[in-house]
Length: 356
Ligand SMILES: Nc1ncnc2c1ncn2[C@@H]1O[C@H](COP(=O)(O)OP(=O)(O)O)[C@@H](O)[C@H]1O
Ligand SMILES: [Mg+2]
Image 1 (tube, protein in one colour):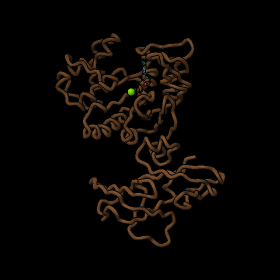
Image 2 (cartoon, protein in one colour):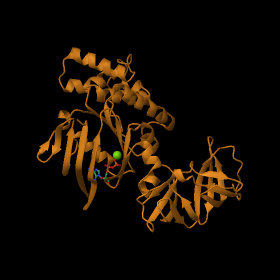
Image 3 (cartoon, rainbow, N blue to C red):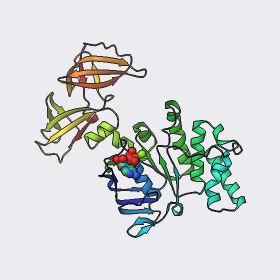
């Protein structure tokens, strides 16, 4: 049985006389123990979807099933406290006037769990997020990362079937955020709780998720593993939103070749492709191979001129003028390139995404 199934979800809001379709026919299903991520730009409906799953909002249409129990759909609407979920909000919602213990114990107190049982379960939850020993501290004495973990402990203290995380790392500074990605993903795996994560941060989504759903304007436009989403984007939007991409328009010659303004290029084989179809080619900056001398016998070469090269530490980012557009190529930082250099860009066929 799936920990969470969402089907045909709809939610519209009316603000200043205009109707916004915040959620427009959204459906997905979580697998046991995974981190499933809704990724998309601000305003695409991520939080609205999470709030509907949590029961903080009643959807206009669709069904939500948590571990086999219908919680929203038709006349059924189960309130948040009766759903088997734990949630961490963007702001954490930690109470500053309470100790760590009191914060984590709060959901159990509300649920009128006996005192002895509360102590046992709070200690267990704090140990799970590596905050044991901090019980008597005031929550304001914790660092940002520790507060984040306390919010997680509080969400887990009722041992929910499902953990909901809304932009859980966005309050932290850049360096801590990167460290907490690994820590949070490791904690989630240790605890084994199925997690629905919402973020607009592509690095966070790529590094933490089992699977990602890319959202745009209230809809899921692509679902896949981080690798599939990054390496095989299904649309210009997905390619553009997740990482940097170079685009090139073309027309199919056959299943393995595409004609472009820069010549015919080999692309990954697609036996079912129809000649004459318009396609969009997408190539990641790190997939391009930059040659300073034209190599012999190499297919898929495109001539360009270095417009600018920027040393960024672990790589050099080259802006290369190709015909009338500028491409980005990420290369080894030792590459001796300078503005004005004539270069040859090799597009390895297997690294080209063909978007219909
Ligand atoms: N309570 C509300 N009233 C009016 N509009 C809302 C409300 N909640 C969300 N919206 C609108 O719905 C859309 C989706 O919002 P949201 O789910 O918060 O997006 P995200 O979390 O992806 O940034 C936005 O256009 C937002 O302005
Ligand atoms: Mg949001």
